[in-house]
Length: 623
Image (cartoon, rainbow, N blue to C red; front, side, top):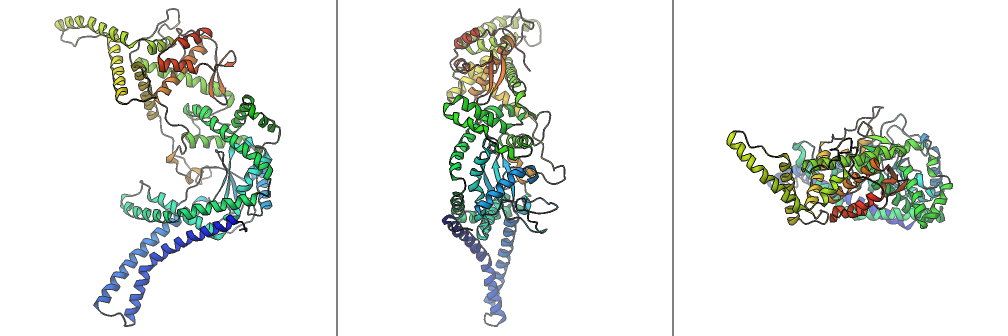
């Protein structure tokens, strides 16, 4: 460890953590020490008598119980598997240039080289300790992939693993990546100090012991023991939490101080690219990838999509024009032998982390290329949403708007949706009452001549069901006012039914299969982290009822535009699925749909449809 101020502070905090461990050990040994004193006094003839004999028996029993409990706790802390970040491992033969860059960087910084390199689908980079036996899979030869030093059978590599954000490799240039990784790689110096490494192992062991004790799937007979282990581990973790946090700050400060001598000027520029890559990655996941994941498709080139998204941003934003000129330099992904394969693996991992998809491909979970995205995702999404919207309208008893000139006169139309969201509730209620009154005499006469229940007009039943649903939605809105709930009772009833229908579809979806072993027979990477907690990082909160209704109405409008006006589904790198009319993005559709959903005003949308030649009375094709 160097002479940096941060390194010395980190070592001081590490010693404080180790002192807490020593005090815990002393407390566990204290009853045993007292028992040894009492037994020694009895054998020497100094502590004799019935009272001392009773004290020896009690203290010896307490010491035995405490030692047994301390041994169990120490065993759990030592053997519990610490948490590990989900990553895509990169072998040296798959990225020799990248390993060479990291090795040269470590040599310039005069620190140990990381033991391996892995990628994560996030805009961040860090060092991760994976020296625990559960994190090191058995291999023919345990060796340091970067240093190339062979090790014995029982020797574990002490250097941590370098985890690199995969978007950095595709967006950053080689020089920028080296500058960004310099302070990260410099952290291997303080990490190699024995005191800091021991303190980290102790803290990670306590954290893993708390997680192990909280596992509800264990045998009920062991739950009291697990509760006691968890209480002790949490107590120790709280005692050393501040020291551990200050130790990590000291390590980071020491790494940053050491890295100032390497590419300092380039690192200032590269930090701007970090923020830009983060913005592009977040936009790509929430606007582009998330709709595909919901349709059972996962984009197989997310990292390449970051470059396209940020290039599109540089085209639209004058402030980002200077970033596009960097694309002529060598990208960092050229350091990989097969960038496409690595990108596909990182994209699948991103789908698992942010959406909770399966670990393997299947009929309902297949990769999609960017060129196929409009047809495979956008078109299917719109038609699926439109079909769900009409199923809910059928359940509410909304009458169809027939078109005598169409091939299917009773097919699903946009006019049906417009009329339902804009027709006055008062007229519909009066119409339902009139139909109910007209049906009553017929029902009475039937009852006089037949013992069967009176027959009722299907239209009356539909109208009554719709009126009942609207009354329930209005009453719920009175007791639970919410800005995200549509104000009109008719619209609120439709939005509530849509939300319930989507919830039923999600509940009926088959669960993701449990991950199995790798083809080699060894445990796969999923064995190192909890797959039951997926998604680990949900991208967005559940959509509100108003947002669901707006999305479905927009999908119906887009289907009508594609089937009657020759519009096409498209992909916008910053906004996701988009409607192309005459090859241009229809950017003015959203406010018109909101006017219909929130205010019940169809005039802006009808004018927009008329201007583009879209015929809402024509049936559309659904899935």
